[in-house]
Length: 378
Image (cartoon, rainbow, N blue to C red; front, side, top):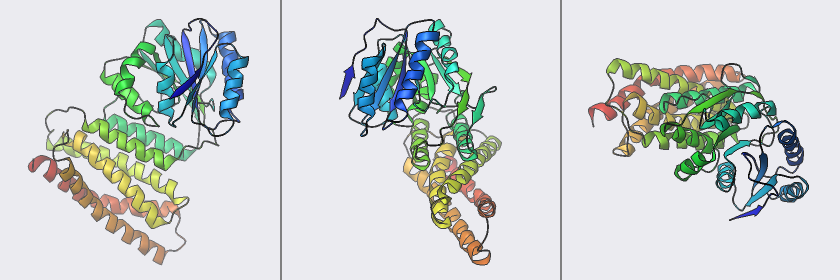
């Protein structure tokens, strides 16, 4: 259930949503800065919507006060958490022609807001997204987040065959009527919401404009990287399993695609391992990272490498993937324990090198196992 504080203005052309959860320190400066930009520099009517998804601090009071002080600012209060849930609720209740959003930390430079919405307002595109991976983008963020972002978006391009480069950039705009058509089919209402929305938009034939952005990562971001990665991989698997696909490709094509999926999986494994290694022992970090990437690897190979879709024999295929995972699990943990015993002071880079080498040795087992299950035994 949502509670809306209405605005005091005529119908806007653009509605810029700021989804928030416990953002009492950042909310006011962000809203005032965005409001000032829309009032002083935007060539068409616009409003700000604060979408508060069940904050427990002073966010709600600050949001209500801002809506009372500033023209063309409304507040939407939700009783459940989830960034996607907040965006969907705000967009579905908006009277604007174009709906958009930006993160409360304003990591995307607001000078890009007009270029973001312009293609949608003009009718050039139905969807417009900020991209940190497009040519011309200027991005300031840590190496870990950069690696994870590139691996994730590469995985989307390989597994789901999407054309856009950056699914998760918190800077997007789309026609409101298009949002109303797409949102009922978007299952995820949390972090995977952005990716699923774009995949469904592209599959529906809508044009997606990508804008290179100036982006500065918020060092105080509270996003749980590991939990978000797990959620995203589950979402990718769901979208891949539900998509149609052509007949199985030839052996040479299978090998090439298997290697591409393997390279992406290896990079994702390394990123997850390093992220987990900051607070967990090597064996635990290896096990979790290997399990997550093994599931994603099997799903990707099932659809992309061997051309298998649907839920028929899904359990059997993933059981085969778990067998291959078991081989890699035993070999890599033996390697970790041996390395700790023989070289106690080994660096994390050394650990990654050794583990990657062992994973490479287990790759042949994975390919043969999956191919037998997904091609010969169907």
